Length: 130
Image (cartoon, rainbow, N blue to C red):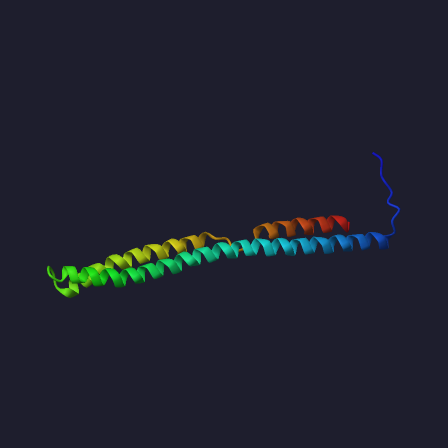
């Protein structure tokens, strides 16, 4: 096996290592920014589902309760018609909110790709200084 002799001085080698490490750190920071912004965007959409579910549940509660209570008041007491309609609308709202919360729980916020590349970079830096 042929070994190559590097004619560069120790100072040159450390300067190159320093430049490479600086570039590597900048790239890792950029990757982390990209990964986190992607995850934040996903979380924002899930929060929007929760908000939309809450708004729909509230609007539905008001409109349906008013309309159905008036219709059912001829058949059953007012309080009973309000209770039945309110329970149905609240159930729909609960379902929408739970859908959004479930989606949020599944979202991994840690920048896993960045963590893995940082581990690789640390290993590379150890190898370079041996």
